Length: 409
Image 1: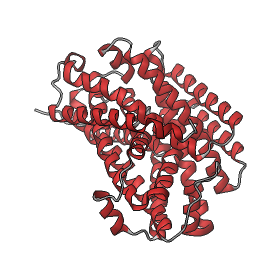
Image 2 (image 1 turned 90 degrees about the horizontal axis):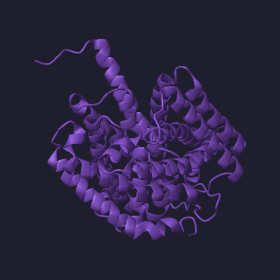
Image 3 (image 1 turned 90 degrees about the vertical axis):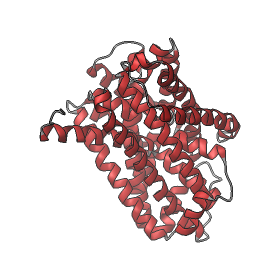
Image 4 (image 1 turned 135 degrees about the vertical axis):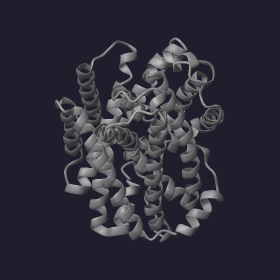
């Protein structure tokens, strides 16, 4: 006989799962995500729709398996990896932290660009203010509560405003739907890059680690974890497709977006062409919301890998998160605004990290039921994970040269 869950407890559980969903989704929807989508839509037109569909399918498999196995092991990813393959967790932690730091420098730059478009603030000042806001959240005695509420509200704001611009730009929806399944061209480097920007690097583990922090683990929570993982990718997929449609409408109208200069911002150009000065302000708010939530998500998740090296309490983790953001800010202030090429490259780099973690988790699912409390993991999901794992290794091998070419290497 199933235990009844009191209404208050049930509402608290729903809130915890929603927070994990939005932490994952808003971690994925950062300045790099927006810049990648704008850049590839400008280059490929409606054919980019197929890359979005392929990335969403890959994302579903990756996210579903990582979240479920994490819930069953009741450990964070690096600790799970170390238990399965001694030393593997340290490698995964180092790669994720490096990728998260690179992403966070871009996130702070994006926040500066967003406030520049929204309020006219000098980008470095806007980036610094945004980083300080994120630091204030983690220094607060109610850090967990603020983290959950801010990412949910700003996530909804981003989707609503982008929907408005997509409606105004009047995209060729029929052509986009056709090329979703019958594309004129396929670019594997593009797919690797946007997969990396959606579930690559730290993003895969953001929501899963949030669920661990809230104690939502074990087989009893597996159905809810599954729904949360699927919903997180669905939210991200909807946002990317809506953003794609908004920019496609501009490109299809004959406007050529500037992708050549180091300071070019194709997303800002598209929003401006679609809705004039209002569009620029909307872009600023969307870009800033994407950036500030990603600063929070990247810092939170990257630091959640540090306990693999030494045990840390909640207070120590919050302080480490503040230091992580401060380092990101210092690097940003010394480098200046990250160009669009850097934001695209970081997504690709995280796409190259992705198969390493997925290989470890697929191995655990097949061979290490002892780490999952004796649970025999779902075989069809494991087969799908193995296929996607092989695909991401192959795409990474095919794409590595193209991805590093984004920064001239």
